[in-house]
Structure formats: C-alpha cells, structure tokens
Length: 324
Image 1 (tube, rainbow, N blue to C red):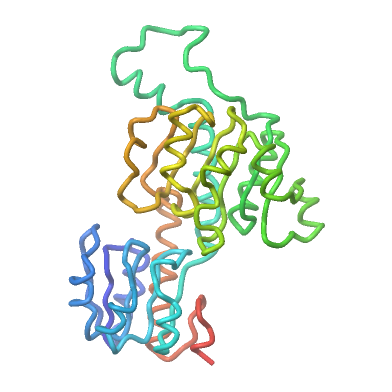
Image 2 (cartoon, helix red, strand yellow):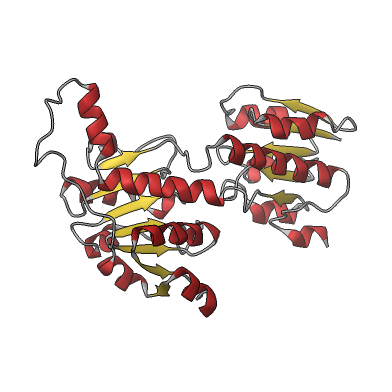
C-alpha cells in the first residue's frame, strides 16, 4: 500500500507513519502546500492521502487518483474534501475531532480579550516608538466582566468557551440547531435563544458553528446591522461563516466596535481593507497551534490513515457508510 503526506506534520504523526514499515509512504517535507496539479502528480498512484484543510480534494483530484482508499484530513473540518464524491468512490474520509477543543477555546478568549482591550493597537503603538506614556483617555476599550456573550454553535468548542466565560461573570446565551440537555445548560449557566435575539443582545458574538450551506455568511450585512455598535465579533470557526466584505464595511463605519479573526473566507487571502483597520485583530489560523494539540492531531490523522490501509476501522470516519 502506498500513501502520500501532503505537508510537513509534527513528530507525533511522523512516528506513527515511520513505524508502519508495511506501508510505502512518501512525504512533502516542506511547511507549505502543493498546487492542485502537484498534489495530483504525487497522489496519482497512492492508496492513501494524509492532507490538510489547505488541500482541495475535489472530483478533479479524485478522478485522477483512482487508487485512493482513504483521505485522512488533519483537521476537524473537512469542507476542503468533496465527501459526497469520495463516498461514491468508496473512499473513507477521516478527521481529527475532539483533540483541539481546549486549545481553540483558549485562543477564542485570546482574540476576544485582545480585541476588547485593543492589545494589537497598543503593541503597534509601543513598537513604533510613538508611545509617550500613560494617559487617561488612551486606547479605551470594552469591558468583558459582567457582559453578555453570545455563542453561535454549541458543540465541544462552544461549550469549552462557555466554561471559560464563567470566570468573567458573563451572561451566556447561545444559538444552535438543537438545544443542549437541560442539565448541561444549568451546569454552564446558559440559555438558548433565537439568532436575532443573540445578535441584538450580545456584547460579544463568538462563532463556533460548522461550515454548511445553512451557515455560509451567517454573519452578513443584515446580521451585523443588528449587533450593538459597542459589540465585538470573534471567529475561530470557519472563514466563510462571515461575509468579509460586509464585515469590512461595518468596521470602517463603526457599525460594531471591533472583531477578532483567526480564519478567513479565502485563506490566506484577505478581503481588501481588512489589514488597514485598527479595530480588528488578525491571526493566521492559530486556534489549534500548540505543540500538544497539533502533535495529537497529526498522531490521530496518521493512525486513521494506517488503520484503513490495513483493512481496519479508523477511529474517526466522516462517512462511515463506506465501511459497512
């Protein structure tokens, strides 16, 4: 069995692959992805592919890689893969859920606090040598303690963010397709509301929903218009949940107070004007970027890949019907 790893991954995953001496595995050892044509050329004869969110695995790729039996995505999301087409071809798709919950929740709070307290602006001021000392009106930001946090999406990461909000004495509301169990709502001290109420009420709106046709641009000009002018938007989920053109316009007009973004619509491209705004904190997709989390993601992705190639059931199939 042959497999290809599309990008350099942490040592934990490499260890699993290197110990799989019954498999013929080749690697992209660089920390940069291939173009689609390069990816096809290296995967054409492969039985397995370990890839990342930055790799687009669509029908064109699948047509030219007829031997594929498994696509192991080193990510929780898998909207970079045409799962429907993979399923038609009997290809198992796997992901790495659960392991990045705490790291992403931590980083959500890093962005929220940085945006609210204008940390990015302050750091740029100090680095520019234009800071002339403390002033009572300098870089006043938004308070966090006691404010209302609105969470869109209430999976593992949304729940982890809610747990951290308790330390800030916040009123926590959430919008989700289905309600949590009452016991869990009571434990986390939150209540479910409709989207409109969340947008109108929240001081901080944080996105934790999966990317689907229904959540595409769930934050758009209309929803931004419903938010408080003192509110902040935080996105550590999926870039296309936000209409970046509408967000830039809202930030330019002071329609909302600010934003913190770790993901973008067309990564690594940014919508024109976004980088010129002082009232947005921009991060290069760092939500899961701890040694421990990325290491475990790579280990799980490698383990899923090896399992399928050995005829075993992987721990995290996205399309388990292929295995039946």
